[in-house]
Image 1 (cartoon, chains in turn blue, green):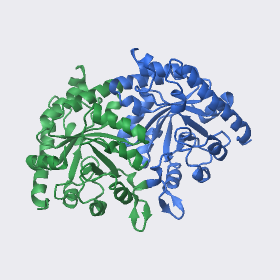
Image 2: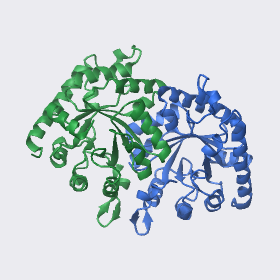
Image 3: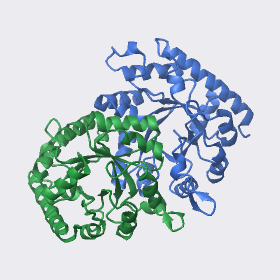
Image 4: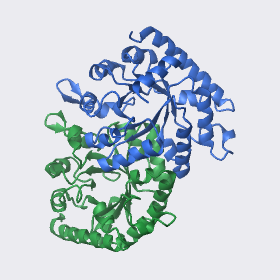
Length: 273
Length: 273
């Protein structure tokens, strides 16, 4: 999916919502546990109930990996049924020396046909480049994450009034352009969103941290929008675990609808002409 | 496995060799491909042929992940047959917000019973801590990697004559001690090994980059040894792909033996009394 196609979806659906499929076998409704693949069945129903309200889905790979080969099967089946008009994100936070990154890229791009994968920047250019060598696919690089630990290294001064996340943005934006790279910027980081937009005005940002982690959707939207919207705001638990009963999909739809409606207003109000 | 037990193995085997199981279905001998699980069968024979010559095995998770659920099965079967007197390293380079890191920890520590997992530091303390909450298990944190890209961020100045990898070492060594944390330091980074040892004199270092990547075993050993040896030097391709014929296990043993013999000499010569 190109950024133009993604923006088209955003305008059509009046939504820049990404739904995080952090599907935890211990949290899904009990009545699903008798089925052959409860994790997949949960995802299938969530996707069916929300596909017109969001523009992206983001399976968090850890939740599937924790279940071993069976979890990996549930993941592959889930990615295979994601609607073609939704952007798919393998939230894997991978990154290794070149030949190893290439194998991770194959796992998520060739086997699973994900549109994108999240990548950690610490190992530098040759750990990220292999992911950029796959036509039509995207790298979503960690820049400024939503968690407390982001302060440990990402905010270190690496030069004259420049912090590590800024150096990561500046350096990495030379490896690939806004047609193949996005950045993770936490919704809890509103203090720095202007700095981010100074360096990468045209890139899409994947924004976790609204909801359970405390970030504000209006604040991050006002400050983060660009002409193509430029934001994919993720919500996971708040939507997929809106109910633990048999009505989980219906309640997930209600929760997603509430976010989508807020997003429609914010787009109306703040999207640059 | 404790560091004392690991050191005991090092003295017994006169080896600080870690064998990297970067098992690539496209590189293993053709006669294995007719078997039900060629990757596992390759690993099984490599392990049988080398277990008395090395003290650790390090499956590189990307190689298994690239094969999907079947690869994940080969991985779990491989970890299950690793000898108990060998230290096992899931080379996964994971790291995410707390609840997600906890799931990765479960995947590698609870399901697979690996002794350790490699973790990326970019997301800070709360992304690493969940891995440290598993008794008897180890975090091997990326500090100064062996690849060219290590220069992009790891060598940035983050203070008065201090570089990012030094800050990572200083900060993270407060999260856990030398009984539960090791660091990745590339064999290609001999210029910085003294700085590493100033900050973490007692920690074990996992050292990739000897062999295919050009690092020197004598140099890194002389500069990196501590009283418990303190090094696990990895070799992957040079050993496991020593032959592409039916004699692959035998040739892997020969290659491992050559490294072990060099290590025995280096231990004799340079291990501090």
